[in-house]
Length: 332
Image (tube, rainbow, N blue to C red):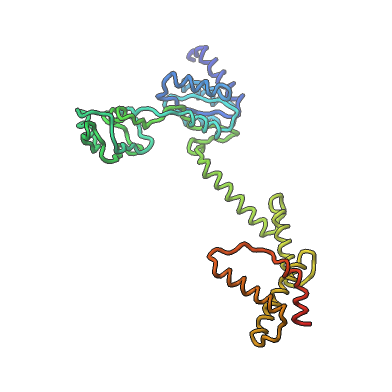
């Protein structure tokens, strides 16, 4: 049986203890992160998470020796320079923090473009020289204008997923175009027997919020239409019932504190309509007072037609006060 170094046993035991004492365990890739930036990220995570780098074999041993169900599958996500992150925060929050801490970095020959790399048209800081030929060699349209090199049209120089050539990486850096991101790349996170991969941890917050708001609106609409009482639907159901009861009382001409004024106003309008028709057949059929009210109504209607914008509605105190008298004048 081969001898196992004591430090390796201690390392596995330390990792196992960290795994078992934290609710969330993440597997990250630290490839291509400069040492100063990595130290800065460690300080950022200091109060909320612990970052631990170790050998792949030792991390695998620690993961497989734990009793947490399904946690050993994290070793499937060991890529590049792997490291374990231990925390009690939500894995989605952890992913957001790590993504937010990433910074732009210059292109490296042989790196994979995370998205389309486009060189935009416009002026450059370059004076006429060999750089013009170098730009044209890699397919960038450029010319000399007013003593400087100008890129005449946008050019997609590397497509997403393609390898960045050495000559392209050099030109991009000289153009101050930094297409890569440097930071802790969280590949997967374990919480409560479930492993969330990076594609699941990536959330469009604006779209998610919009989806939640839409779902809330649809659920509220359903509960109101199905007459399901809850904290949100009850006020709307009461308002709906009040409106329906008022409409019913008006149509059935039931006098209440809410309908009386409306029914009098409706009767008054109907009275004026009937009086108008009667006057059209026989102008002597209505008295002077009623004729004056009909004339006043006609002027108001004509004025509203002449104006482009509707006038603000005003209460006619005299009409309300004389509503009963008008009825009497017509039918008494």
